[in-house]
Length: 223
Image 1 (spheres, helix red, strand yellow):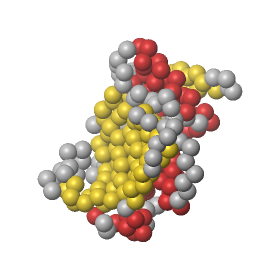
Image 2 (cartoon, rainbow, N blue to C red):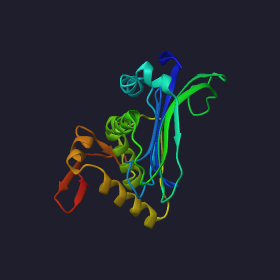
Image 3 (cartoon, rainbow, N blue to C red):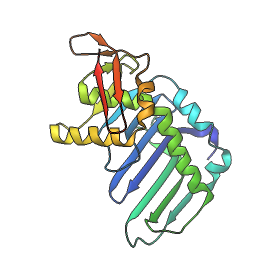
């Protein structure tokens, strides 16, 4: 698959049946994400139509033609529990849609389906892990706003107008998602995610978000 043909990037990390991370980035500007690569998974997902190729272009800078030529699907016997790392690339839609409903005619990728106790090593496994981290760092400020919208119904002025958020309806499940997110994200990075942003409540009032962070806990409030 030629690099110029890529229009969609999928990144997935799973432990057994539990999905720790799922990121989709499209050349048409659509981005979607669920999770922070840790467990228990963060039960909050979001999708935005940004209208920009910025996310896609930045990620593709780390992808060489050699990576796209590899097309690895490594599977091994599972004895204790499975780990799956996947980076897939898609392109050339047959139905003129280049988003979630696209019918891609070309694909390639790197998939490593391994036992938790594996001794398997591969240089491209390192690429997949690093690529997932890069995609998370790139989308962290956006995903933070998705989480805040799910938890507090406060919409960041940085979120595109066409944004969808999906989160648990039950308070108990939403609280679990809250705990998972703040346990997995870097506490020192949190203030930068909200820097320069305003969050609008249901009455239309704008607020700044202020953090109080120590070694034991993270709290925040809207001023």
